[in-house]
Length: 111
Length: 252
Image (cartoon, rainbow over all chains, first blue to last red; front, side):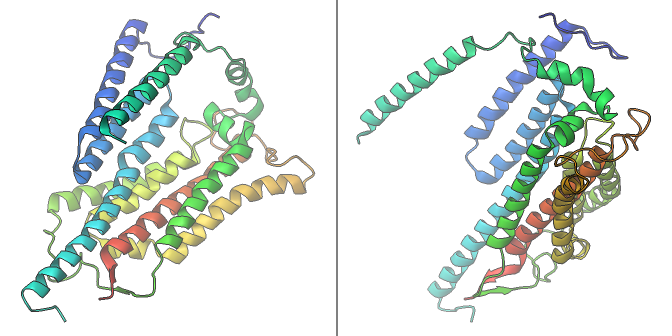
């Protein structure tokens, strides 16, 4: 089946579009690898946010602007902030426990 | 199991997955060659049938509106679940927000961040509202608009205004907005049934001109409700998590 040409007021040559799509695919693959290879959770969330941004560009390059908008907000903002808050909660619980243990060791509990 | 046996098991599984994956890839249509009839049919008839030039929204809120109701309630259930799991438990007490405490250990928010986030908050609200109310004319929609709206609340928190964040989004109001958004979508469908039409039939006037903001009947209305529900759901989840992180401590 012949690919239907979409008439738009602007034009991008198919060759340039191919270059864009291949570039962003490679960048997304690199970004995903970077997320996996980052071991510290807090840093990983930041890298994940950048990966969400790359995914948004990917969807734009593949002509899905609606998914771009969703990915931009969910992948680059909402998901990282939820993870960040969860990490902050876990860390606080840890630091409170550490402080209490230190307090006992020095013989001066906080109560 | 020894680590050697585990490695072999992994390699065997990996080889099987790779073989199936490559086999599957071989059966895919060529890049850019869409084989199915539905996309082409929708592209041809959607604007004429619905007066919506945002064909993605026409598909989401009209042709497969019933699926979207389901998705809507997935998010609703998820937000309800988060709110339930993170509710105040017995044995937990509220402390003053660490952000506001005099002896807070975090460095104060820098003026650069305060200024830029506060400057962005207003435009973000406008953008979110615009996206949620223009589903019928642009590739936006209630989902995207709703999350952008929720981002405005996050910006206020990032500006160091935890108390302002809580004042702008009291849990009762967020709950109510979320319920109205989710229920509104379902109610649009039930209204059609009450008029003797199938569930979620587009019963409103389609307007005269495709691409006008007032066109497309229930597509615009549903998108508006979805925007409300998504914005409220995200604000609710983030607000519950912030409460957990900043306010609630274990009673010692």
